Image 1: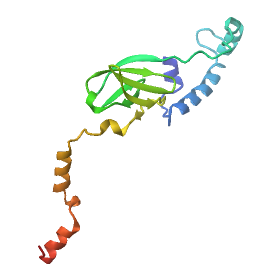
Image 2 (image 1 turned 90 degrees about the vertical axis):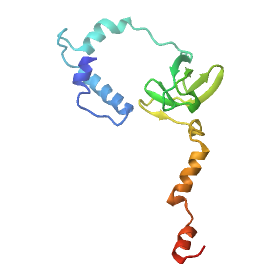
Image 3 (image 1 turned 90 degrees about the horizontal axis):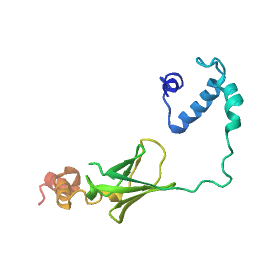
Image 4 (image 1 turned 180 degrees about the vertical axis):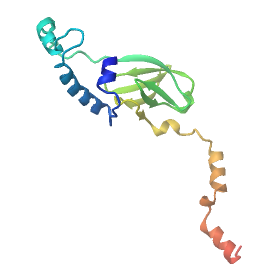
Length: 168
Protein backbone atom coordinates (compact mmCIF):
# COMPACT_ATOMS: atom_id res chain seq x y z
CA UNK A 1 0.00 0.00 0.00
CA UNK A 2 2.80 2.41 0.76
CA UNK A 3 4.24 1.97 -2.72
CA UNK A 4 0.86 2.67 -4.32
CA UNK A 5 0.29 5.71 -2.12
CA UNK A 6 3.72 7.19 -2.88
CA UNK A 7 3.81 6.35 -6.58
CA UNK A 8 0.27 6.07 -7.94
CA UNK A 9 -1.82 8.63 -6.07
CA UNK A 10 0.55 11.01 -4.29
CA UNK A 11 -0.44 14.63 -4.86
CA UNK A 12 -3.43 13.79 -7.08
CA UNK A 13 -7.09 14.69 -6.56
CA UNK A 14 -9.99 12.69 -7.97
CA UNK A 15 -13.52 13.86 -8.71
CA UNK A 16 -15.04 10.63 -7.37
CA UNK A 17 -14.19 7.06 -6.52
CA UNK A 18 -14.76 5.86 -10.11
CA UNK A 19 -12.12 8.30 -11.37
CA UNK A 20 -9.65 6.94 -8.80
CA UNK A 21 -10.38 3.37 -9.91
CA UNK A 22 -9.81 4.26 -13.58
CA UNK A 23 -6.51 5.94 -12.76
CA UNK A 24 -5.32 2.96 -10.71
CA UNK A 25 -6.26 0.49 -13.48
CA UNK A 26 -4.08 2.44 -15.95
CA UNK A 27 -1.27 2.81 -13.42
CA UNK A 28 -1.25 -0.94 -12.58
CA UNK A 29 -0.84 -1.79 -16.27
CA UNK A 30 2.19 0.51 -16.45
CA UNK A 31 3.64 -0.65 -13.12
CA UNK A 32 3.43 -4.32 -14.15
CA UNK A 33 5.84 -3.60 -17.05
CA UNK A 34 8.54 -1.94 -14.90
CA UNK A 35 11.50 -3.87 -13.54
CA UNK A 36 10.77 -4.65 -9.86
CA UNK A 37 13.44 -3.46 -7.43
CA UNK A 38 13.53 -6.68 -5.38
CA UNK A 39 12.89 -9.43 -7.94
CA UNK A 40 14.68 -7.65 -10.83
CA UNK A 41 12.00 -8.76 -13.29
CA UNK A 42 8.69 -7.42 -14.61
CA UNK A 43 5.71 -8.34 -12.37
CA UNK A 44 3.63 -9.23 -15.45
CA UNK A 45 6.22 -11.76 -16.62
CA UNK A 46 6.63 -13.26 -13.14
CA UNK A 47 2.87 -13.61 -12.80
CA UNK A 48 2.53 -15.33 -16.20
CA UNK A 49 5.38 -17.74 -15.41
CA UNK A 50 4.79 -18.60 -11.72
CA UNK A 51 1.26 -17.74 -10.64
CA UNK A 52 -1.20 -17.75 -13.53
CA UNK A 53 -1.33 -21.56 -13.71
CA UNK A 54 -2.32 -21.76 -10.02
CA UNK A 55 -5.49 -19.69 -10.53
CA UNK A 56 -8.84 -21.46 -10.79
CA UNK A 57 -11.82 -20.17 -12.80
CA UNK A 58 -14.62 -18.31 -11.05
CA UNK A 59 -17.81 -20.28 -10.37
CA UNK A 60 -20.33 -20.38 -13.26
CA UNK A 61 -23.16 -19.20 -11.01
CA UNK A 62 -22.65 -15.94 -9.15
CA UNK A 63 -22.20 -16.19 -5.42
CA UNK A 64 -25.39 -15.59 -3.41
CA UNK A 65 -25.99 -12.09 -2.13
CA UNK A 66 -25.18 -11.84 1.53
CA UNK A 67 -26.28 -9.43 4.20
CA UNK A 68 -24.08 -7.94 6.84
CA UNK A 69 -25.50 -7.10 10.27
CA UNK A 70 -23.68 -4.48 12.29
CA UNK A 71 -24.40 -2.49 15.42
CA UNK A 72 -24.06 1.28 15.41
CA UNK A 73 -24.70 4.13 17.83
CA UNK A 74 -26.73 7.00 16.37
CA UNK A 75 -24.65 10.19 16.31
CA UNK A 76 -25.87 13.56 17.59
CA UNK A 77 -26.71 14.62 14.02
CA UNK A 78 -29.12 11.63 13.54
CA UNK A 79 -26.81 9.58 11.29
CA UNK A 80 -25.14 6.18 11.45
CA UNK A 81 -21.91 5.43 9.56
CA UNK A 82 -21.55 2.40 7.30
CA UNK A 83 -18.36 2.09 5.25
CA UNK A 84 -17.81 5.89 5.28
CA UNK A 85 -21.39 6.56 4.08
CA UNK A 86 -23.76 8.29 6.52
CA UNK A 87 -27.43 7.19 6.67
CA UNK A 88 -30.09 9.20 8.52
CA UNK A 89 -32.31 7.71 11.22
CA UNK A 90 -35.19 9.27 13.20
CA UNK A 91 -33.98 11.98 15.57
CA UNK A 92 -35.56 10.24 18.57
CA UNK A 93 -32.81 7.62 18.37
CA UNK A 94 -29.85 9.96 18.93
CA UNK A 95 -27.26 8.26 21.19
CA UNK A 96 -29.14 4.94 21.05
CA UNK A 97 -27.77 1.70 19.66
CA UNK A 98 -29.35 0.35 16.48
CA UNK A 99 -28.80 -2.69 14.27
CA UNK A 100 -27.97 -2.00 10.63
CA UNK A 101 -28.57 -4.64 7.95
CA UNK A 102 -26.39 -3.91 4.94
CA UNK A 103 -27.62 -5.68 1.81
CA UNK A 104 -26.52 -5.58 -1.80
CA UNK A 105 -28.96 -2.79 -2.75
CA UNK A 106 -30.22 -1.26 0.49
CA UNK A 107 -29.43 -0.46 4.09
CA UNK A 108 -32.13 -1.09 6.71
CA UNK A 109 -31.90 0.18 10.29
CA UNK A 110 -33.69 -1.52 13.20
CA UNK A 111 -34.26 -0.39 16.76
CA UNK A 112 -35.15 -3.54 18.61
CA UNK A 113 -37.46 -5.40 16.22
CA UNK A 114 -38.87 -2.26 14.63
CA UNK A 115 -37.59 -1.05 11.27
CA UNK A 116 -36.84 2.66 11.67
CA UNK A 117 -35.05 3.56 8.42
CA UNK A 118 -34.54 2.21 4.91
CA UNK A 119 -32.14 3.69 2.37
CA UNK A 120 -30.80 2.80 -1.06
CA UNK A 121 -27.25 1.52 -0.55
CA UNK A 122 -24.63 4.01 -1.64
CA UNK A 123 -21.08 3.05 -2.52
CA UNK A 124 -19.69 6.56 -3.05
CA UNK A 125 -17.47 7.28 -0.01
CA UNK A 126 -18.35 10.18 2.30
CA UNK A 127 -21.91 10.54 0.97
CA UNK A 128 -24.91 11.38 3.15
CA UNK A 129 -28.17 9.53 2.50
CA UNK A 130 -30.94 11.66 4.03
CA UNK A 131 -34.64 11.00 4.59
CA UNK A 132 -36.22 14.38 5.56
CA UNK A 133 -38.92 12.56 7.59
CA UNK A 134 -36.25 11.61 10.12
CA UNK A 135 -35.96 15.26 11.14
CA UNK A 136 -39.69 16.09 11.38
CA UNK A 137 -40.67 17.23 14.87
CA UNK A 138 -37.12 17.98 15.92
CA UNK A 139 -38.20 21.58 16.61
CA UNK A 140 -41.22 22.30 18.79
CA UNK A 141 -44.14 24.05 17.10
CA UNK A 142 -44.26 26.81 19.75
CA UNK A 143 -40.66 27.81 19.02
CA UNK A 144 -41.34 27.94 15.29
CA UNK A 145 -44.46 30.06 15.83
CA UNK A 146 -42.50 32.48 18.06
CA UNK A 147 -39.75 32.85 15.44
CA UNK A 148 -42.32 33.46 12.68
CA UNK A 149 -44.25 36.07 14.72
CA UNK A 150 -41.14 37.97 15.78
CA UNK A 151 -39.56 37.98 12.34
CA UNK A 152 -40.07 41.10 10.19
CA UNK A 153 -40.14 38.86 7.14
CA UNK A 154 -43.20 37.01 8.48
CA UNK A 155 -45.28 40.21 8.94
CA UNK A 156 -47.88 41.18 6.42
CA UNK A 157 -47.15 44.28 4.31
CA UNK A 158 -50.46 45.69 5.60
CA UNK A 159 -48.77 46.24 8.98
CA UNK A 160 -46.20 48.54 7.39
CA UNK A 161 -48.80 50.28 5.24
CA UNK A 162 -50.83 51.04 8.37
CA UNK A 163 -47.74 52.55 10.03
CA UNK A 164 -47.13 54.88 7.06
CA UNK A 165 -50.72 56.04 6.62
CA UNK A 166 -51.56 56.17 10.31
CA UNK A 167 -54.49 53.81 9.77
CA UNK A 168 -55.39 51.52 12.69
